[in-house]
Image 1: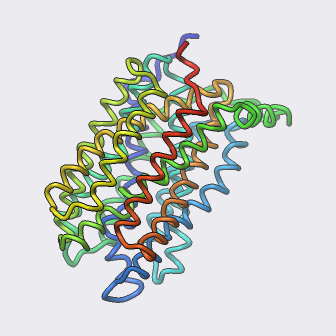
Image 2: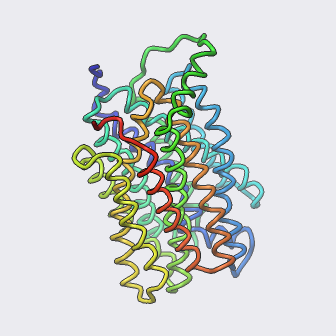
Image 3: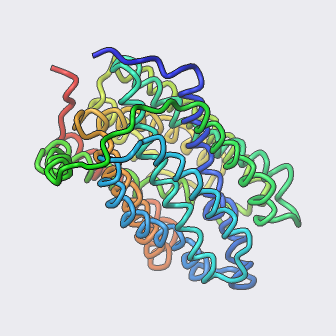
Length: 399
């Protein structure tokens, strides 16, 4: 079936939306020590750092609950309207964290941004499936996903140049994260086309059939389990890696941000390259191969004492790992063509649950067995994901 061209601003608008959702992730990444110091005093230790890191766990739990509702809403409401609602939630979350007077307040508003991230993650790819033909989807997915990595690149550069001193994480939210989120809302409003409004009355069977196509289909359900473990393994990069370099090698905040800049550039490139390779390699094959190859490289980091060798291993492994994202998203998107909104909403549930799981397991591993145990734990989670995808899923677009 032919698709109507959504216009040249379609993919850039969705990429900017993804960009906006990852800006605040610096609070539990590069700024993790600084946020910990703000609410728990100085000097931070493993317990207080792990406690602050649980913001990700709380956000994940709230997002999981909301994503269930989103699975129903996507059946009967405009996907663009839901995407705009997600952008508004990101803005509210950023403002709440900026004004947070204590950690309890932070625990309330950080998850609101997580809800926005869940909505944007689900609806952006649903819209790709609605407006683009099959051959163009993986490339578009690669560019959209690169928006999150570009957020890490630009965020690290901005932190290094403007917010690594006395300005701090609150100024970063107000002067950088907030304007970006407002620009994202504007881009989505003007750059994403609207489809004809669906009927307001939807039969109960439509909701049930939408979920049945996902949870009663072995490959689709297994994709959700696989993405949960894959996302849990990613928490190493999004939450703990910057703190690992700062504590184990004595790097400053500015230096850690610079390393994040380099890693982000490589990761963004890998997602774009991965998007172009999907049709050549295959969704499932590319996904499994990148997970299997990158995991041993992560394990080596735990035992190498030299900073430069660790950096090289981290960058190579990160580039290989990044190529799984467009393959993974493409595989999930094609599992239930008639229920893409619900499928991507369920995927968001398992992504956010995986993030919460990774943060919880990572915090426990850090406290119980230090950095070596934490790194080996995340590498194992990646291998579990590879096994699930290899043995239990199939690519419906390959014969």
